Length: 292
Length: 164
Image 1: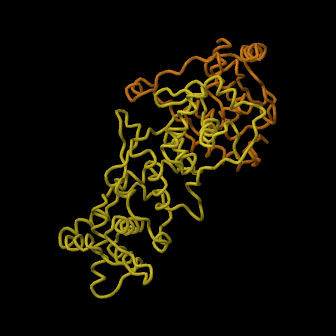
Image 2: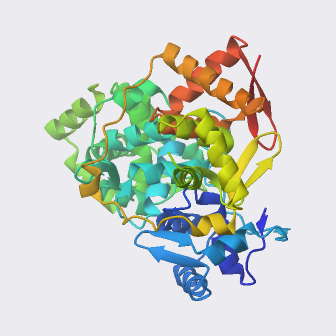
Image 3: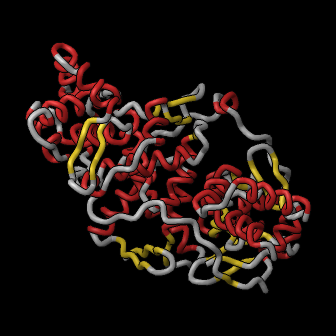
């Protein structure tokens, strides 16, 4: 539910975002937060810029650097007591909790939030504002960041390390394939102590997944469950096993055939499998098994 | 501490533009900035009298600038950058659980002075932010006070906490 502030639907949507997201009338609201809300509502960037320009030319908002602020006329429009309550297109729900929170769900959500900032680094306080829209709690944002740092998918940026940016592994993860439901169902529950585990990079984990898949696939067809079983037999912790398999699928090293529910090595996966022998795989296992 | 300062505090602590600022949060921010209760009341009276401020009383009291009040606000400062961050004050120390509970009780007493019986989760979170404390700690202290029954909660359109 929102308010009817403006005849143009896009302008109205922005004024509703400003009404709801602005917590400081002097500084105004971060344009990045409005843009983020806009992207969740599925709006495209061109229409967003046109709507901003219309609001500026109507004298309802002014933009100052990274913020936009209501003008006195804009403020009066938003306060109009006659203003009707109307249905406005709500931003999509970023996260819907069903059952216990998993590392996979948390990772997917935080990467989506970071990605919607168009690959730029995001200040921690802005990230907290955007995170609040997901409906998850502030403590879970800390867990999400620990998760990304552990898996080397994001790192701190800026002089005071108060911003977060996706690493090249994080960008590759974001651009990869979504996990099939069968794999998502295997995602282990988030455990706080796992977040403190040793940091392992994507390539090492993919190497392990390719090794486990390829070794089994030589004699029979394999499933996600079997790859998982083989990795666990190497004493690799459960959270790491799932992430390795999901990552290898996401980055195109493992292909999943939904009809037969079998997993196959892609060409890049076969290359990894060939590389994963002898000392290389022993080293990779060592990295994945060691704790912090 | 002038009415102008109060106007700016209200502007800086709004829940939403239409809603305005929770009076308890503004009162707390006023005290934190060194103002006393008498000057807060007279400042509110002055702003209301000069038609710069509306007082919206429902189950909680909200302070909302009028169009005239909005026109009195100073222009926005330049956007901060990382260099400016270097000069930002150091984060205050994390409170102990006992200090946190005392802070929550103190906030309830402040609300009671204004005639509010309950406190919204939003107001508590805003004051917690003024104190630069972690949101997860507020959740912890509220959970603890709910379990020892010193607080009760009503969840509806807003989540409101009451002291038992």
